[in-house]
Image 1 (cartoon, rainbow, N blue to C red):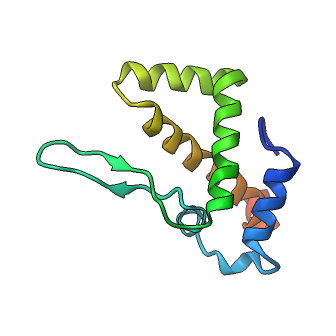
Image 2 (cartoon, rainbow, N blue to C red):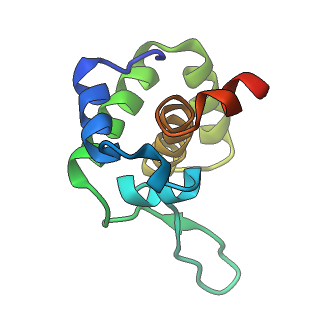
Length: 120
């Protein structure tokens, strides 16, 4: 897997996916299942998204732990956090974006057929 993703995180994701990973049809569906899909919270001219409180809470907590570990010691993530902080994003917004990115990585490893991975 990737930086910060430990055995317990993989176990939690395997429990979430279950024995039929093809039932999760898209990366967005997997994100919603994990509770990391963005929910619009715009008002007037302010366009922003908030954290989703739904989905599997244990999977969401596992993704949070991975995001925090990456924010501490992963150089590309530290650069991303620095850039987003300069853009005016809050820490919770940055963590939400990081969790969505982590879900993309996990989905490509667990749910996509191996032929689709080899073709790209």
